[in-house]
Every structure is written in C-alpha cells, then in structure tokens.
Image (cartoon, rainbow, N blue to C red; front, side, top):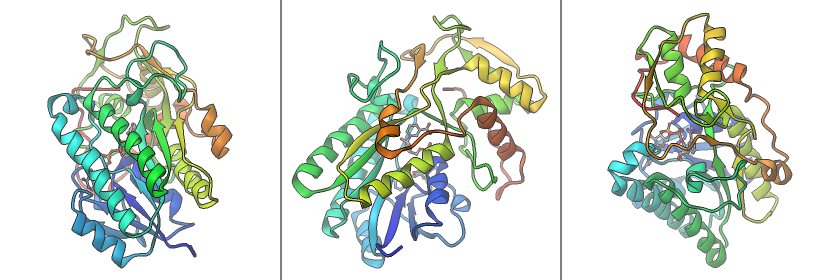
Length: 338
Ligand SMILES: NC(=O)c1ccc[n+]([C@@H]2O[C@H](COP(=O)([O-])OP(=O)(O)OC[C@H]3O[C@@H](n4cnc5c(N)ncnc54)[C@H](O)[C@@H]3O)[C@@H](O)[C@H]2O)c1
C-alpha cells in the first residue's frame, strides 16, 4: 500500500482478473487492458481500469505518469497456439514488442519489479517428465517462441538496468474463482474444460484429439492448475521482489497429470450430464503428456497449489458457467482443446 500501486496488464482477461482479485485487498491495483480478449466486467469495483494497449508507448507513459507504480504484473498477450502458427507476426508484435514497450516505460519511470506470465510452451515437447525449469528450451510454435524471447530480454534488462523479474511458466490454467467473481470467458472458448462443460450442457460434442497416446487411458495428459492457485503465486512473487530478492524463473503446475478422459468422467459426475464425445485425429505438435516439476516454486515462494484437484477445477468452472453473468453471451465451444 505504502509503496504504490501494482500495474496489472491484461487484468481484464481470464488469469489477469483472478490475479487482480488476489491482489486487491493488499495493494492498490491499476489494470491496463485493450479488451481485445478481456472484459471490462471482470475488473472488480474499486480497481482503476485503464483502456489501453501495451504497444502504445504514449498510453503507457500516461499511465506511469498518472499513477505511482511500484511493480508490474504483465499478463497481456495473445495466447493461442494455433493462431500463432498462422500469424506469427501478431505474436512477435503483440507479445515481444508489447513487452519491450512496457519495459521501456518502466525504465523511464524507474520501476524495476516485474512478474511475467510465461508458459510451459517454452519447453516444446520434452521427452522427460516431470519438466523442471532447467529442461531444454525448445518451443515448437511462435507463441512459445515469443514468450521465450521475452524471458531472454528480461535477462538483459536485469543485467543492464536492474529490472528484477519473476518469470512464471504456467502449465494449463483452469477453474474459476470459488466466490463466482470471475471465470473463463473467451469467445470462442479455446480451452479444454469449458469445452467439456459446453458439451455437458448440451452443446457441440467434444472432439477428442487422439485417444491412442501412450498414456493410461490413451488420451492426452496435462497439468491443470487452478487459476486461483496461479493468481496467489503472483501475489507471492510480488512480495518476494518487494523483499529485495533476485530474479527467478518458476514453473507453476501441480506435478500431477489429468487426462482428457479423467476430466470428462469428472465433468459427467459433477454436472450429472453425459458429455458427448467425437473422436478426431491427433493434432500436430501435441505431446502425449506435459507435467510440471513445480518444486522450485514451492522452495522459492513457499507456494503450493491447494485448489487444483479435478473436482474443484470442474466444480468451480461449472458454477461459473451456470451462474448469471455480467453479460448475456453463453460461452461457445470451439474447435481446439488442451
Ligand atoms: N490460460 C492459460 O492456460 C495460460 C497458460 C500459460 C500462460 N498463459 C499466459 O497468461 C496470460 C493470460 O492468459 P489468459 O488465458 O488470461 O488470456 P486472456 O486472453 O484471457 O487474457 C489476456 C488479456 O490481455 C489483453 N491484451 C492482449 N493484448 C494486449 C495488448 N497489446 N495491450 C493490452 N492488453 C492486451 C486481452 O484483452 C486479455 O484481457 C497470457 O500472457 C498467456 O500467455 C496462460
């Protein structure tokens, strides 16, 4: 409170809105979002909202001039793997150039504490599980490549300009705020759990992208981390930086995998509905399993997931889907998952 506000870019988006919820009782928060994917309605009352783009240096300068900013949590990004294959320029511009502009605005205003949303996509398709932070960095799409380039840029901003950054490599974010204040709201919805729930609610059948992987039930396995567990890690990362600690790079996952088949079974149990499934081919570049070794985050931040079991993930996402929203649209199913 005494140190100034936390600027949360992308704070009107899915993960960002939960980060804001986890910060707002402890810090003044300023959200900057261009609403390309986010929703103004997800920003809680009492939080300053600035409509603006991280690519726009003048808009950034204005935000840093009008608010005393102590630290930045940077989530604003495009984050669709398939789109990044078709339109890599969009990813290098929005994610990499956007972060460069943000870091330059921070530099001009003497702000040096930075928490960055990175991704397990920086690892590509590793052969060894679980995946530790020291695994080879070998992205297989422009999305992951844009995030890795930002991580490298942060290293040099640290060495030359004293920026201290906590890089958080999320695995698969899922679930919704337990109090129903936010949840996943993308149109169309690209992520697996909302697609499963849409199918349970009588929407399109879920397309299973491969059921012949070398996994216990043949379906893909991912490490799903509850979005509120993720959000809490950002608050802890800011505390860590405020205590003067050095830059760090941390995986955020559970260390356990959940298969698509297990999630479908849990969804059927929780909703009481059948989840219609249609078999589809594997997607290029989809590894059989991705599971985090998140022990470094536990050591460094004393962070441990506590809401990331299948029941809580599905039950909170289902409650969010069923509740009246600050909007009339119903989340729609889309073609891809995981
Ligand atoms: N959801 C996941 O499973 C996951 C996994 C790994 C990493 N991440 C990372 O977490 C962050 C948030 O992801 P999300 O799932 O909440 O996505 P999201 O699309 O819901 O949120 C991103 C937000 O950033 C905003 N934004 C995008 N470009 C902007 C720009 N140029 N200027 C200002 N605002 C901009 C969007 O309007 C949106 O509100 C992203 O950086 C993403 O790469 C997400």
